[in-house]
Length: 202
Length: 251
Image (cartoon, rainbow over all chains, first blue to last red; front, side, top):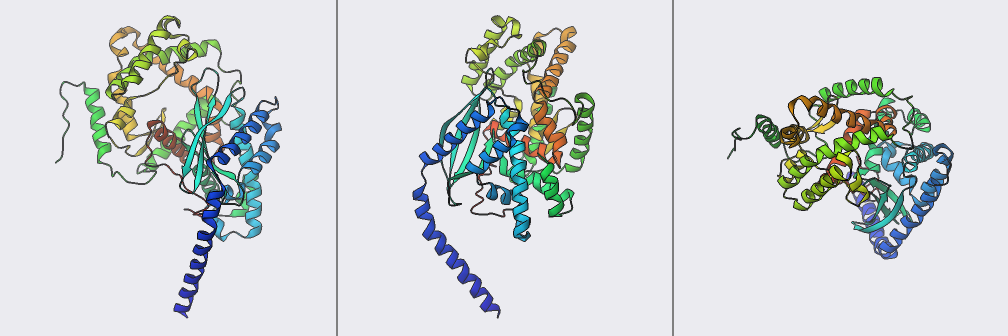
């Protein structure tokens, strides 16, 4: 029985590896740095339009959420922020969590982006990092030294989407892993209670 | 094998700074992304800092920062304090053997001290010479001193052992200390404090979000400080370029 189980696991991982090997080169060839840059360029144009629309941050929250879901892989960002507890969560719980997280992300980062009002955001560079692309953008505000925001873009979800942003070294995935972890700790690991908190947070 | 650094001609403060740096150097080099052996004391300091912040800046319900930016008086104070810090940055640039940065900050100092009316106006940034901030903590980094443990300092907030040594080194090194007459030194210190308070007010919403909006503001402030500080120092050893598609449940 024991060897049987090991064999089965071994066979499964072989299949997974073969599938990955088969799928990966095709996908790697499918996406180019130019496409990653173009995605971020189009997104930043949309974002700049929203920020300078004259509407308040609160009025813009639904638009920010749509923007993040259009150009970003929100389910992957959510799952990564939740970390190991995502493994034991049910499908319904993950769905509820992802939905709450999406709104939280839009409120929290939308408000930050709103502060770039009147500034200029442009793509200045980029390059491959392991299996994904990093696109570098610079934010220039009047009278302030420019600062950079980096975007990590991948097509592993099946679509070309960003999954991380790094503002002056501050990594969104790392930050949200810490924050979501702390929120879960505060609820002694009760995922449902944490999701309810998350709907009001950000 | 063990080198002992003994104070000699160098000022007492500088000796203390290098002493602290040597202490930091004793710390194990590879401790992962965050090394926080003083977490318990740090958290107590954090709570005190947060209580003080609530007292001074009004806590979570305080009015958000003025979107039009700081008024002319506050802007003048920040500019003046920044300009008085320039000679120190030039000194650190030289100690780091970054002659271009030292020259850049020298030009800034000359431009703002003259055209900027003694530094009240930051003319240099408008002329395309923005600040290239640096400090003795960065100098220690350039010299190969490791970061050391994370520490949260009373009033000053997040830091590391190396950056604490840097603060002391900056105090000892600051050329302005030898230029400003003794009876003016309280005014000099007061200006620095006013500028720091103004920085806090300007970053208002962002800092308030961390202090009052986060489930664990201590952990959040620690992470943000370390990530941003390492980025500014160009320390890429801890860069967390992880790929959620490779390892979706990374611990």
